[in-house]
Image (tube, rainbow, N blue to C red; front, side, top):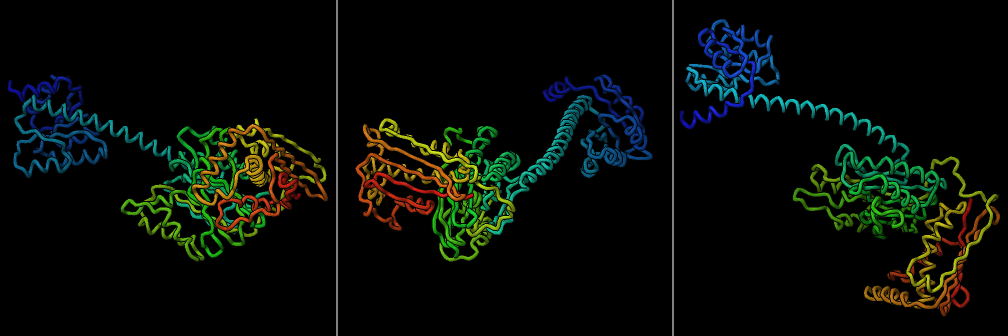
Length: 573
């Protein structure tokens, strides 16, 4: 036995038993093949022409066919074609047995559906080797068919689940007020499910809330987080809670709900009913853009916080921006799908190109930006979800028929709160503002005002501590290096503080159906000349907090040589 015969013999050892149909018009050939095959454990069926072979195949469903070519009534070519049509997509090997040796005949054997051929006279070892090979091919084909059937079933199940999830998702978002006249929006998902979320709702006081969230990734896994997020958002806005409280509630919900590798960059905004003020919390989002009524850039608002779902509740930072706006100013908030959109060369759209749309007067920057992004990408498939919101600052036309009162003035009792911080507490560097806001914000009627209250307390506390007790000079902040020096001096003086005291008094009372918060801070510093308080210039990077407090409060007064500041904040019902 030569080397080739040895290899062929070895390949036959593990051939599994098969049911084989032998088709040949010569009885001697059929018997010879039957003897060869049965000796290897196979079961043999015989047919003397193509017509009988087709009928027997349909009756017995063999695992393999050995097909003669030249036969009466129906030849091997016709029989093979009929069997292959009967099988459809199922695979059963057909090996031609032929004495023909010309290329055209052999090519025809394969072209009409044959899988292989053997030349007569038949070599038993070659026959067994080919049966073994085609047995493996048949097994692999059956495995592929089984896997394909499973994948098809799984795909059908996934599509069904997607339809159910989409119905639930759309139901969860049905309450959104994105058709409000103050809102224009553009949403373009990169997959069936949008990983971006955009919601809008009216506040009980007649204002307008919006929420934009960008979950990690896109598609169904990202969209899953939209359901709890929307539920928390709508529950909170229905109660008229503050933007910072909404952010905290959303973070608490997602931190518990989402896996560790998922989070949601978000921007939460509230436009007051008069359209004169926007409260904005941003975590992990691109810079928001505020323009004037002509579309010219007024301010970029940086995202100051971590995305939702990362920090635990005690670590969460909820301080919002409060923007005093003019009629028809526009706030633009967008997900990173815009600046990170790629052109045909793989180059990002970028923030610089985005800002060009707001560098001059453009009455319709919204549409121009969308068109430019689409043109830039060449209408290619998106790599990320794209969402753009334009919020126009003007009075809100709320459909809230019976707004819930912020508090019942007739049945709200007056109260007073006092906190004294000594040098021991102050030098630890922990601001009491968050704790104070929570404590005071739990009082009846105050919840909806927590963002404003937090802003007022933050500025008042910072001024009393830094300029009153620590005696820091704001003029340092006029340069970038001076700004760094200012906070280095602040940290140093705070660590070494051994005397000083700061007293905070907050009083609430009702007068003529109107609630008032009186906030008074007294510091132990040397004071200052109240009449010489410097006005803040337009280019100064400091001092804006006092202007904001004056815009939020009914009154701001200094006394006791500048060591006492008292503000009055009104709460109407």
